[in-house]
Length: 315
Image 1 (cartoon, rainbow, N blue to C red):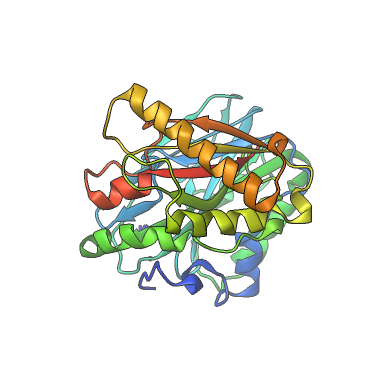
Image 2: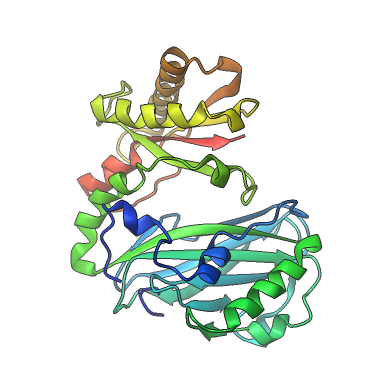
């Protein structure tokens, strides 16, 4: 697959995270969601990370709360589309509720283009009439197939849902620099509208707050990240919302120590949001995950730094 699918990556620039240059129909597909989803679905990479370098293989795991037919759509950095599951008509089957389906070796990052990839999973309680015709299909950003695919997913609204996963790809030799810049890439102003679309069961708000090694206090960089988060959470759309603040550590240290440290990090962020932004305590629940949910498994300082984080979920 190209890039995993393929414009050169500059992760530290905010424009790399937008759809400003995409055709209108492509923007509509990328941002598509169901207002009243018929059930809930989950999507993640098997590798549990979002940055893949040239030569990496990757797979996906997905599930739904009801029996469903699944379709995975890849949108590459040049806005070309491809159906990566089902790839052939023989793969089409209804997957039982609450049964994770693992799609191994879905692709290899090979270029020549690298950048942001969007993976959209669609799940249908009933198989759409033209479902099999889309298996393994590839089309370009200016193809009439965009309108045809949009029609398919719109007509399925009464019995469907979708979720979106964003990935980044880079050249092998740029991996370390790109990994380091990923912290900057996530420091974007949150669009409250995007966060309330119901596209995931418990969507992450992507402003992770990072910590120094073996520390639970907010440093100047962490305060800046927490300030961005606090401003977003004060939006009127979240007035009645509850959030789960989840602390994480890197892979070093014992499990018991990391568990306690991750809990302290989550509590530090909660206290900051309460003190500086007057967000009620009842809206903020804390939890620690220790080292159990690493984003990156590389034994490098850059990977360790990005694993030491606090994230927040809509509860």
